[in-house]
Length: 391
Image 1 (cartoon, rainbow, N blue to C red):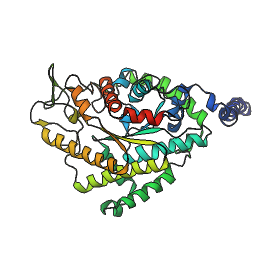
Image 2 (cartoon, rainbow, N blue to C red):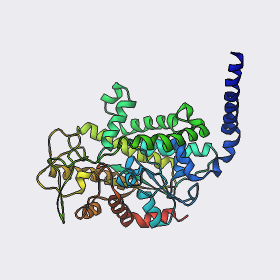
Image 3 (cartoon, rainbow, N blue to C red):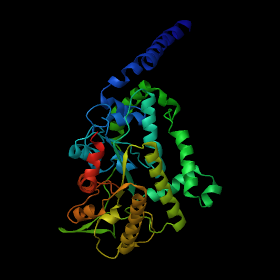
Image 4 (cartoon, helix red, strand yellow):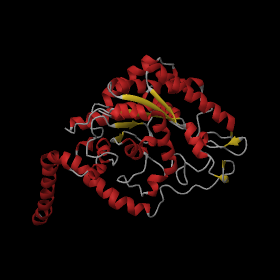
């Protein structure tokens, strides 16, 4: 038994010693010398360095940053068609990088509300990299995405997850929301590791390499993570080439949300935008309004099927609510010195000719959608972006 234990413990001790030396002695000195694609296998804050919309590991001073949810992250059929390959080109950052000739970096996080997408995530990434000695400069310009399809609902969810019942049920002033947000910034965006194992960078890299290189390819041959959605009974898009049936239950603006919750969610977005501007005072901030799929197209008939609505919704109500919501965001931007880009007109013009979403992911743009979306940003804010990033 003693010989068996010795036989087992000796290689285990050797492997443990090698790992500890690699993790705590050698890896910290190699951190800024690794190929960029290896950062895609590290904790979330370091994955930004693996993005392919910049020339070097760290973006050059004056770079363009993007903050928001999964639209900022780049989800959609373009990414799916590329095999979910983070080293490929699949979203607006790549197109902006080409068009403007500047490094682009996205802080986007799928499923984020305004507070974690615009406020907590960019600051946590910035502070985490700098604490590790990877000196990330502040951006020259930052695009703050507001997505009408679920940001209001995500803000509502964030309130219920992080505020106690007394504060959720009693209206809060903008100042109270801002104080609470800054409390969260100090707690969750200091640059410290968010999860207990996130400080083990070498270990994370090895485990994620095995997961992405072995586990995901095997399981995705069995289960399609983004299956094709069949056309529904209600939603039919009018293109200049004809009528195209598309899935029902598509995302639209929050037409039936209560006025109080709409006000609270809008104030949350506003305070997140003001917070990130105060933390990055030299960065030019531009708010980008991202329409939902139901707001992009012309529809056959008077009713459409919306994701959260039990019954079909008036097509006119969708357009009127979208216009009112965009108008409130535009008014806030003008009063507080933010740039503002409403991408709806250009997207609607392109959506008269081709589908900008799907055929698998109908919540996000496909390649044609990202191209039209990026063109709308450059047409509206190109001079501002070039002036802010030419440093």
